[in-house]
Length: 251
Image (cartoon, rainbow, N blue to C red; front, side, top):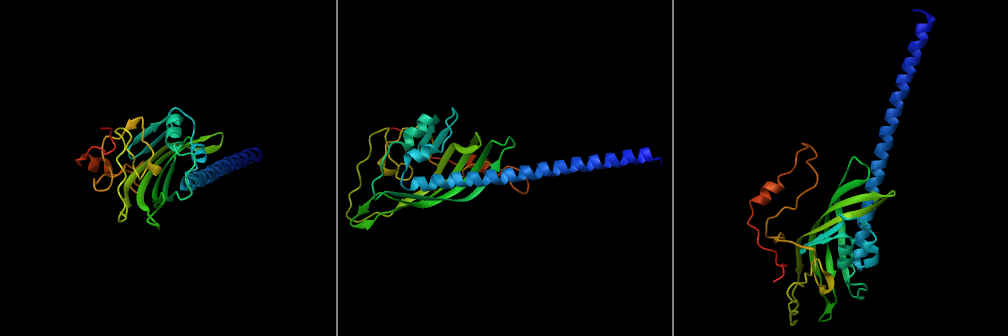
């Protein structure tokens, strides 16, 4: 083998090694960005929970992206766009001192899209709601929920695009010698689990069915099975249920 051919082989091998190193570096950089994005999304969701604790409406609303597809879904229905988000979270501008709406954001499954600017997440929420003292004692409501979230990155900052707060149950221990509050007017039903303070409900789209505990409904999961790669079977399960109409529908 002449010297020129050997030199060309060495150059070719070095170029191949350089290309492989560049590809490996790019993959490591992608993985690092993914980890940073996941941590940023966790911080975003947990910040939402802390702001929710004392119903810091301005801070909560500022977590959302102002886009046409933005939405917030609760047990009574879906509020559309930033206007809908403001209509829901802006109803109680100043929470009374005794108000406490503590919902822990736990057990996340976060799925990043391949575009680098969108993601989905599923979380459990557990907590209590306290609206005031009853007969001199704390009168909490206990709650368990699932969040199905969509996120978007704008100018390098992750924001909430769609929030779906899907109630399992809310249970408040009935205090003795306390008269129940009067029912709200038709079309303005108040739900202690998702409308703290007895706020009037005004979703753009009312939920047609009651999917809370007792219904057997499984809230659809955005992610596929982590081992098989197949969708889970909640849609088939839900199709067999005889769901009752939502109790929040206007009469």
